[in-house]
Image (cartoon, rainbow, N blue to C red; front, side, top):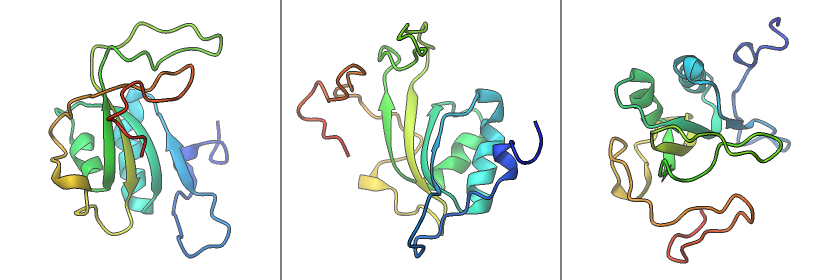
Length: 141
């Protein structure tokens, strides 16, 4: 790998005034890079979606909360990890959080009065085969 191939060496900045904006990021990095990824999001004032484990013991988790606009917690029983052939991997024993983030400014605007450190009650789950919510009370946002 060189700087051209390394995502952490690229500019992740998001310019909402741009007519052509291809910097809305979709990130699901390996765990050993989470601290670097969150630092990069904050430094570059990036915008996007990040999939992370809820791991409150790490400082990157709390730093990410500064940029979080909204988030959805997925119970460990939700089968979200599978390979290209559709084989479901053994699920890790943690809650997975899907985070909508925007690091321009700060996220004192986090949604609905929820607290970043709390794990939300999961009311339904997205069926990976049809991408629809199984629980009608849980809207897709």
